[in-house]
Image (tube, rainbow, N blue to C red):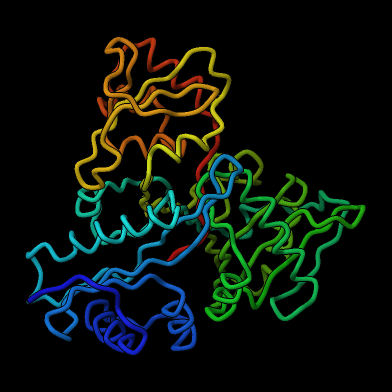
Length: 388
């Protein structure tokens, strides 16, 4: 008889066997990293007797939304053996995982999909994009345009603490970033993302920007760049250009919006840009989530009707005021915004605004209702540096 249950600690080797069979590529970080996260993860499996048929694991993480920290469940290693596919095992495991997240107060959940339509069935929707750009030295500014100092560092140096501090300040400006604790920074170190870094301090010595980078042959790789000021951003790019004798091409990821870069690059012509819609997310529990959203001034209530068949506890109507959130049996038809959990989740990250979602018929409501939601939701860009 098939049973959904937690995967015990002594069964972690079964997780690894299923992971290795399904994904067929070695994970970075080695067994040390794998075991560290398996011991922290919520581990659910579908078993036939003692044989593991399928699995869903959830990392206990934290994400930043509107400057607030939200407990988040990061879904990883979703897999089943081929002979067990098509029987609804993953669906049962995903439902059980979301129910467990709800119980723990994890209001958000992220995952990196192998198939967007597959995970939409479970209430997830795209909320960010990965941008990678290839540059040459000719694209970069050449004149020194900063008054502070640049310092090479790495995770082994005491000054790397300033890098962590900059990231903490930077992620508060975006929607969707991970709130990195010491364990996550250790993960990045094990995966060799933090061995080489550059740190920029302003004229007063305050840390204002950093980049994590390395070299592969004649290519300089930038893993991420976070700057709190335009001076810091320009200084770091000039640091990159100072290495032009060491590279033919710069491949940069997590360096911000391409349109913003084009405002100050020496020559933004013919940039090789790759944009990938990557991560998906969903709101796990709508009512307590809404209670934490810092809506702009609500002079009148907002009304919301959510359609959610998968996590059935979200299905229903809500009234949102400055005093809080309450569930209702029904809401005024002329004032309600109607949508599904996928669109609601995407809208609440700010990735796509209510007006555009309404244009593409993802939301239903009067023009006045759409405008009220447009005004109520703070404007903030989404971004995500990390993957799992």
